[in-house]
Image (cartoon, rainbow, N blue to C red; front, side, top):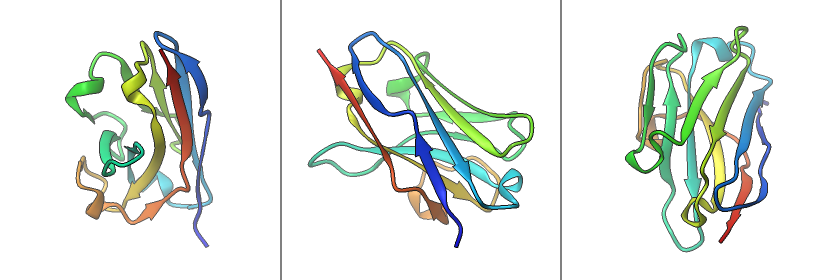
Length: 124
């Protein structure tokens, strides 16, 4: 059974930083594009960032541009989301997901594998 496992969440004060990691048992992970999504209480899941299989192209939602950076390690088996200048409105459960098409997609429907999520809480 393929697993995506997120880690790195926690409680941080506004203005602080966290780095989320997405690890997997998927042997062909390097051929997948990977996205990060988040869901705050009472809200729908929203796209945050994505990185193409090559690692050379990225996509961000406007609200995190300039603050968040998505990357993948050279072996392409772990994907990171570096989150700086965090705001209380960034509070949510963050999920990583894998898209077999390999391209950049903001639609959750394009992602085939999903992790269980990691909680990020930003206090004011």
